[in-house]
Each structure stands twice: as C-alpha cells, then as structure tokens.
Amino acid sequence: MNRIFSGVQPTGNLHLGNYLGAIRNWVKLQQSYECLYCIVDMHAITVWQEPAELRKSTREVAAAFLASGIDATKHVVFNQSQVSGHARLAWILNCVARLGWLNRMTQFKEKAGRDRENASVGLYAYPCLMAADILAYKATHVPVGEDQKQHIELARDIAQKFNNDFGVEFFPLPEPQIFGTATRVMSLRDGTGKMSKSDPSDYSRINMTDDADAVALKIRRAKTDSDPLPGPDALDAKGDVLAERWTARPEAFNLLGIYAALSDKKLADVLAEFEGQPFSKFKERLTELSVATVGRIGNEMKRLMADPGEIDRVLRNGAERARAMSDPIVRQVEDIVGFLHP
Image (cartoon, rainbow, N blue to C red):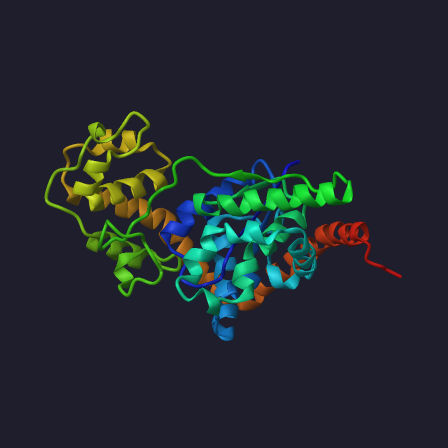
C-alpha cells in the first residue's frame, strides 16, 4: 500500500483554516493509504518556543487529530522528537543537499524577513529535516498546501541525488498531494485577511478548541453586508469566485466558502441554494452546520485535553511504531554512506 506522511507544527491555536486545509483531508486519506501523522515539534523550535507552551501545544495538536477522526490504532500518530531517526537522517541529507537548492527556498526568505543574519541555522535547514521526515519512512505521498510544494520538490531532488551518488535505487520520489482549490478561510471580522491565530480578536477565527456555544456565537457575530446572497453567476468557468465579485463582497464569499467546505458541496451548488436569501437565514444554517462539525470536535478536544496522560500514551505508542518503521530504513542509509556499525 502507498504510504502517507504529513505533519503539523505545534505552535498553538489551531483554527478552522487548519482543519479545512489539512486535517479534514487527512481523515479521508485513512481509507486508502497507510498514514503517519506527525506533530513536528523539532520544526517548531526553528524559532523560539516557550518550553511549557510547546508541550501544551503538542498535546493540543494530538487532541485535534484524534477528535477530528484520525484513528491512532490503525495509523500512526506521534511527535517527531520521540523518533531519533528524523535527526540522524536529516544530518546525512544536509550533506547531500546543495546550498544553492536551499538558497532558492522562498519560505526561508519570508520567515527570516529582513533580519536574515539573525535567523537560526535550523530555520535555514528546515527543508532538509522535512525531507528526512518523509524519506525516513519511504513515504510515497505527502499531502501539503501549495506553499509547501517547493519543499516536496526539494525532497525529491535530495532523494534522487542520494540514489545517484551511491548508485542505489533506495529512496522513492515522494509525490505531493494538493487537494484541488484550497478553501480560502478568511477572518470572520475582515474578509480581506486570512484567518490567523495571531489576530488579536478571538472573534476573527473559529478555534478547533471552541465548544458548540463559542462556535455559534462567533458565526452570529461574523461580519456580513446588507445585500442578498449572490448566485452562481459570481463564479468563473472553473468554479472560482470572479476576482471583482470577491473584492466587492469578501465576507459574503468567505462564509459561503466555509459552508461549502463543511458540507462537502461545490460552491456553485451552495450559491444556487442560497441565492437571493438574506444573511440572517443563511447564518442559521451555517451555525447549525458549524456546531455539528467544528463544535463537536472542540467538545471532544476539551475532553481529551483534560486527560493528558491518555494523549501521552497515544503519542508514546505511535512513536514506538514509527521507530519500528524508520529505524531499519535509517540504518540502511547509514550503511550505504559507510558508517561503521560494529
């Protein structure tokens, strides 16, 4: 069976955008793939993290996975730092990758900003660790957002160079999985900006830890406009919102897009269903749907977070299974490069 690897950084405050953009798709992939879902705490420390908050956030992400429907008995859920093979393989891949390749990584430039000289070496070498995450399990497919596609291409380049350098056909070339047009989840208070954990207003986002009451309140308070809801004529031939229509009514299309994503419907069908109706009626339906999905997840996350020992047990068990899969692969890599194992 083909093998999936993907990860989420434990940087706190997972929100609706994280759920619709990644975690929901991971739940569906369980039906067709052998899956490893990792909380990448080693990636998180490429920028400063408060140690206590990092531990709390690691458990929170694990709780989000489980509450969303990821089955930790059939698949592997673990945090990265418990599996030493990631770091061991990352060093070898650091020595395979070329500086020129890393210099082309756009995410480093964005995250380091103007003060690039003060960025950590870890942030710069982040893509090599990401390649190690994938290749330590010989994963064949990696579900990612469009912004991570360049890193998967680098992982493929590193795998190919390793194979060529040592005259082996050892690593498969992992394929990125990008799920169509990503749902653009924007702020509930300003439809021109992305939903973000850093927004000072908690009413700008639906957190995955929000219970049913909090979700309902945030939907009711979400910014709207006074016009009736638009119809399918707002879409282009590909089913995307026409740029000028989005610009004119960003909040309306944001909420309609969220409804379409949560209900697993095409946006065109949602627009046809609600065309000409007032926001008040639509918000009632969106509230019901959001409470039934995200609200349910938030309630379950709170139950799980109240028992950190259970979450730790899941992660410990997952790490044991991950080590059993990755250790033989990393050991073979070490043999190939010539490390002596007496």
